[in-house]
Image (cartoon, rainbow, N blue to C red; front, side, top):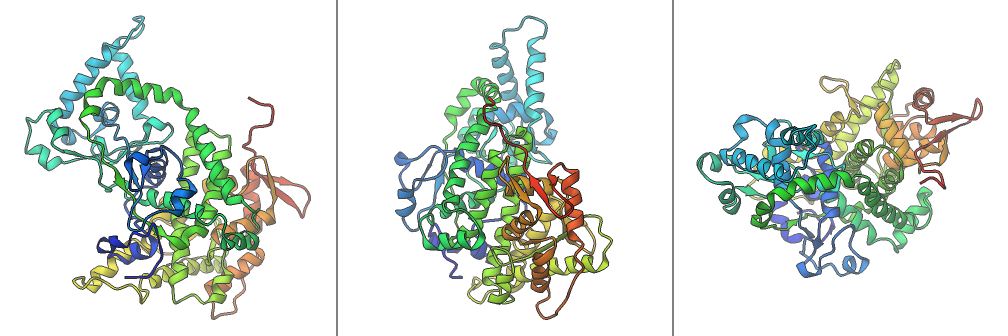
Length: 533
């Protein structure tokens, strides 16, 4: 197996880590995990009670103390205890789920919940009890984040409220169909609902949480201080970012306590189920120890968005993009460390983590730039592809080489492209000519993530931040470096037309303040002025 250093040191998991993508990128980023579920899973770990090897010494929220991080035993995973919120999901999603996914015991228990809730309603007869429940059901169903063709209990809420963040629940449909007369209570007691699988919440959010924990271990190291000096960060910025995430998320959830109260009221009609469920801890995997550098950037961006004064639904959207871009960055950063295609000189040409992304506007008329952007994406895929074939990765003895490499590619460069296409970062969705672009939504995310609320940066400084954090090259020296990184054996030049479109898009979005013909500032206006309550 590869010698990639791990945090935590879970070397006992090597049996299940046969996929090269897991061996290099951590356990795990998975192709079927949806964008919103990266954020949901991250928040689930963040908010749930957690422990390492002693349930009696668990901590409720946020991140572990430094003492815990320093004394973390080897081969001991982080465990957390999520709430399944089974009754709440039944009330919210059963009515909109496919008929064939509704077992008879689900429908009977749903009717019993409605009867229990009716007894708790005191109405002035403007609305009937049934109308009140219908409105509440539609309200909660409106917060669905992922539904698709899933059973009601596997659907996911948008995490706009703490009570809407639920652990994964899987209904054993085949076993349930064999027992058509089973009661709800027996179904729960006999394990027809499972609460510890990672089918949809596939560990990607866990990896992001572990990356931040891993970053905290480096707070006082010379390596982190050198990283800050090299890339222009203030000393102690990482520690401030972790604190801002703690405060920002707590403040965010305080804005939606009214939704929490409604959720608690619904759940109060199903206390028996809560008593029947034996809550089992979920076990996190691991992240590469080297990932603290990309985690530094992730913490900085996540903290800036937490500080922004924006609508809760938009904040969820921006935090989702933050998590998705961290997954994309993590794949590229780790690949650059293990690819034989990248020399030390080329690594230094890239952003803070050694890679360059050439992005353009969606409507691009420059054929040369279009071809360069297409080649840059191919180059990035080649580097991820080669890293997955690092000589230290040894396939299992019984693994067929073709199937083994196919599994790796699915969670490597194919995941990078698929996930990028789903957020509109790579176009077109199908067909040839794929390249990376900045849509209006993604541009908005970059401004909110890279510029603290209420602050301004020159356009040049903003582009430099883009290159540092993501290797994103727009114009000037950054673009020259990115072209050289993309074509290391050729001395190519491209026309410097990038600044015009990025400036125009920022101006149209209300983020640009022109100071003169030569100087403009990029502004993040989403802050709370002093003295405003």
